[in-house]
Image (cartoon, rainbow over all chains, first blue to last red; front, top):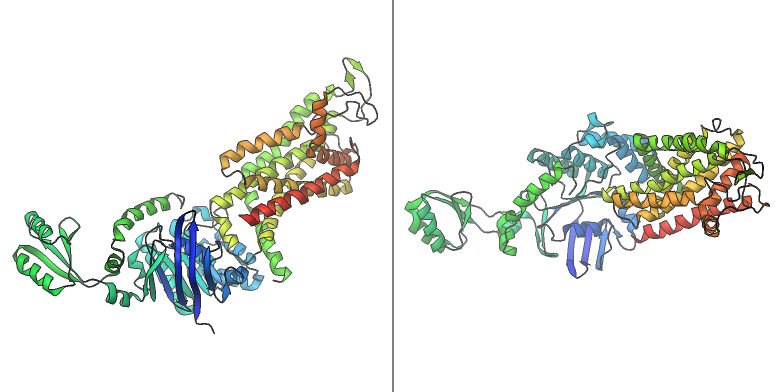
Length: 324
Length: 269
């Protein structure tokens, strides 16, 4: 048995002169939960498109469930389920009709098809909506239906491209619950892309991608251990104190209305800071290394600054019915 | 893959088109109202003037009424509209992402297109068939056999025209653009197909009293729709302006050629 569900070797892709993927190499072990983390435009969707055979790589090879995506795309397609970033449901059909269509296209016989449709609808708790037209569904319901559809033909690998974009916090949490359960129950390999850093904490392997290059690939714990930076969160007593801290420690940056974050990876510096400002702080707290700090120390940029604005845009897009 | 699995896929794609069409009231209303307008207003209105009169003098006796003459052409018009407008659903699939759902499936690309075109052709054939209900009103009496032959011919014609619509859709990217584009194609083709007037007013192939200028005759003769209308007239009212085999050959050729070109387009994208 092959222990790697996906093997990507030296894959590159370009749109005109712009390189979307630059010699990407990665291995996704079978049965694992693999998260591809990176800002928008990092090349995540391009990689997914290559892996689900919608786009040919401009160089390199990719093997999905034992089938080369270039030479044996049909075999690769049979073992994968895909949830795209933008909805690909037919919203003039009912939930059941969408699933029936999918089952037929994947060549499933009537009896197992009908049984699986009931089972996946139950899984995503849409049983009561079976015969409703998809147009009346909310963004979260559509996304759940898409996950159900991607699982209908019992794929070995599930691709989810930004599965929680445009959804509220509660729905996002529910979707992650389904996915966790699925992986436990069905021995499924799940590859997710996201730019929400808090969503990759539960993944087995996190792969950080930026500007089309893989810059780190390990478990969240290992990433934090190796690249994470402990920080000190403080709230100065007054604005004058805050001003002084920023002057003395230029690496400090603001958090919220009055808070400040100071990297605390060097004890000497931390001691010096505390000795100097101890009396002018109203709150002091050590923050253990986060994936956010991993991303920052690897790329020199914040992921969150960009994603907060992005999330609002995503939410607005979600309210427009998933259209951009 | 075994044939039964592939057939399921084609059936799914075909069924989806049919389901969508039955939920689209506007399309159905268009399919019913169009022939009514053409037959009731144009057909009834012009019926008395169709009697072989050239410059005030009755030259020949015509064995058909104008309604009878127009009837097969209205069927072709209905098929043209529905077939070519079907391409909107191709644009829709591409714009709203549904196409990707099919493209990541193990279905071979040519069969995806085949299922889609078969679905569109079926809808167009049904819209053409709706006109047959008006046959009695147009004084056209049909045997069951004639109806079946006509429906078969309509299906092959619809298949060719739907493929033509699909290859237009591959070139026109937006919905709005396509709406304008399709109208500027459908009506000229229809009018220049000897649909609303006979090429030879005497309705006989031998009598060469031609009241039309050369260019118009030329346009009509190079227009493939002319031969489709002619073939259907042959079946429904027993009148042909051209050798009957022409129509069948042109309809079959359109189906094959347009589908193959659409297929090449589709595999490339």
